[in-house]
Length: 557
Image (cartoon, rainbow, N blue to C red):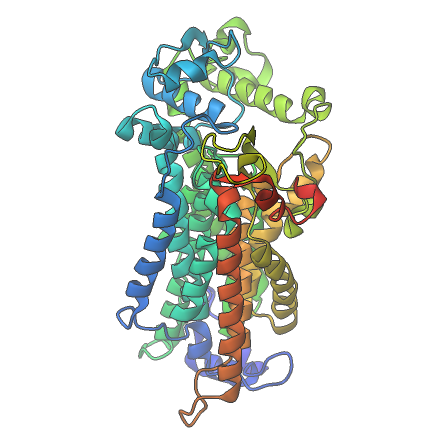
């Protein structure tokens, strides 16, 4: 391929060389002829005003309606809301986390529900997660008060916004409004995502910031490749094409989102690492498509270093900035560590505030990995190997043995009732998604379809690292970060089943008709499945037999 050898040092190639490269590289791994390079770099997007935003807003509104409906009930602290809602209010009131009264047991919770907010001690509290998610919960408490609606408002809002982001991201990846909307609808009716959007825990915020970051990376891929594609048609006196961009705004925004994800939970670090590798592969692929010689070396230097600065360094700076509140308050937990422990060696050059913050991080890490947590057990702990098939969901709240005629239990029920909130994924969605992920892996590796790589890398980096921590209690609700990528893979596979809308002569294909029936039936079944488990997601009072009919396996009880 002699035409590929004449390469400009800044990463561009001359027009004649690029044309020869396009002709030579114009077939896929199976020998099939590929579309022209310009189309491969940047396939045309569907028009936004041909129903794109109308459908997006409609599905997002549905997701919001589901999540905000009776959001304030039950009027109690559900599961770990007892920690995060109070920590958030403490941040709002004092600027740092304080301990709250704990004698008798549950005293602080009862006082807050009765309207008495004077529940905090003067002593600081060690909180074992960063502060971003708690500050987000605090924003809802500032707007609506320290009550159930206040501390659940922001989770419901950002759960809804995740649906919006996923629709637009999958639409961009698939170049199909229909496939994007299928992804959004499926996420809107997932039971786990639904429940996590209605309780004041941190994981829904982690899921949002991860999806936001990856949406930015996908947008960056389009942004740069569109410029490469446009450069192929522009007259250039020196004959160069494909000039490379060092400042890429979408990647900087992705770095900020990754930093906020890391500032919510540390588990975001694995996703940052996974997508750091993936975006390098995208840049390398673009260089090779344009016929650049020594593409790997040039991509490592010209793309890799700026990408590291834009994504990783920006994420680290953003993460450090999220600790501003802790740094500004001398009374925060461990803030006085440096003053009590003089620095030695190289640590003498580190400012005392940051040395105290480093020690704080060491204490948090010890909490998550120390013998104390490893020896702990929990009735709802779940091994990550079972997460893809919902082997062991978690119950967030339960009121058992409600007598007939009491608390909404029908006097004619003939049996006791109960009300529960189960963090249970919609089974048909998760099981279909598990199969779709296998298909996505094959399509990514076999056909080198980059879109399926996004779903696979996102899923794996949100799931596999938890196997290293299976000697301590971990829970199924951590998998809420996996479900957007499951839905992404499922929607893309459903798009493959749908097939093309028209033949080359503009006629509808039989495959499309059959595919539409299959895809439509699957989506309807998922929606019906969600409707069936709705009562056990929303604390509805059910006869014991009705609850048991929704517990399909013994491990769910």
